[in-house]
Length: 310
Image (cartoon, rainbow, N blue to C red; front, side, top):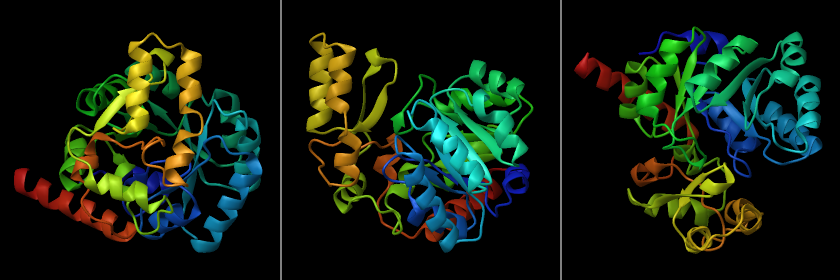
């Protein structure tokens, strides 16, 4: 299906990367995905360095397979986490919300592969010039913070613009989506929302149940005026965001409304006042499975699709 570029680069069996989801992607899920042959990812989010160190240590206890840490570069703890991944010999770092240039040399000197998430051709080419090892190209179908271009339009344009490996993200839920991004030229796929309902994912059961109940039109984008729009499931909080934005709310007011909202949903199970971040494919997720079952189902279905149409 894919050309083994990502498997060889990251030393994994399947070119499937689990999305880094703050308050959700912890050692339990990351280790399960890696054990199943994909690339498990610990999401640092806004957590301090020592918190992430403990998640790294737990992951190492649960698997000897490669895994990654997703570093949110806007975090006040980014400098701490940049050092922690070196000290703990993490093999792969995925970055978001900024440029990894500040840390790139140190990470490469310590044999860490660096893969930024990008929402445009411009940023993809800029990252290639910096010398990153691969890029994750994320379409606006994804959950959480998003860009403006769809996966279908963005991936082939980036593939044409760069020579480094490209991993597609956003709107991939099953083998059909997996095969589709392969046909667009991607070397692998990053999947987030589908893993929310994995048995090993420690997100609150209320959150999982909302994903499973979701329909095709149940996600909405809020916070566009902040410059960091977010896709999540519609709920009371989302309606409050929309009302505030329509009434001319300031960036500060919108950010204050969202403060701690993801934690409320992910850890406390507050599905009314929490931010239920999810991609547009939430309406395709209908059952809870193990990480292994999810990965093998997506990969095998993808193979069958390509055999049928190619």
